[in-house]
Image (cartoon, rainbow, N blue to C red; front, side, top):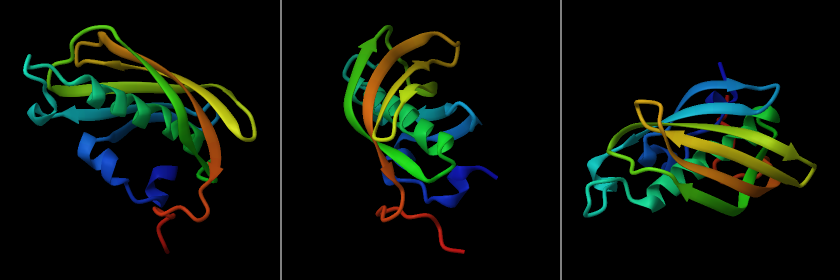
Length: 142
């Protein structure tokens, strides 16, 4: 059982094919997978950068939820993405970590890799740390 079992999956995560692979509640580190379908591709046949940015955002965001054991999530203030290599449709894996977190602001970093393990994009973000109480997607009722 993980903290993610307590919350319904957001529609954006469903669209991206988000799944939890590994996590570390002590540090807030997460490893997540995405299914980049052909509908995410640009005319060149590679995954459009906006989808990669969304995947990275959905990689970094769960770090605070994991670290806080579900009491807080984060709302992205800014997201800086560097596109390293073209990403083909298929399985992509994101790793996110907390660089530093205070009571209201967190600094996050991560990368997105293809099935071969090559980095296709990296990101850093600053985010507001927000209590999960009152979320639209509130914790699941018992």
